[in-house]
Image (cartoon, rainbow, N blue to C red):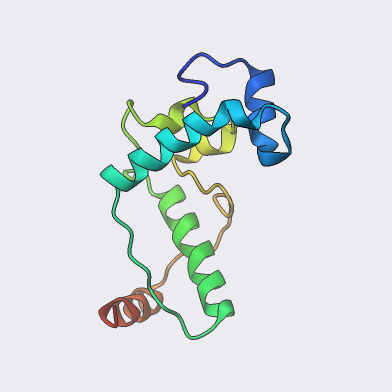
Length: 120
């Protein structure tokens, strides 16, 4: 949202420093705005796993699978097109960890994920 609002690279770099930035108070409004967009336009679901390892494995495979999908691309209006990170812009995902991983969801993984989701 900062880039969309016309912030230069120095301001964005300061924002990325988070609460350590001497300008953090100036960024609180934009943080509230982002939080409001997330609350009003997004839905989240928590899927419990049996271990941290299983969760990490699913996280990597889900991100890598979506990133590699040729039809799973954001719209031209997607806010991430203005992201500071080139990886976010390229992958179409806000979480850019694992976008270059070669791991992918298997049929077995999908069945397990479905099983875990039904528990919620």
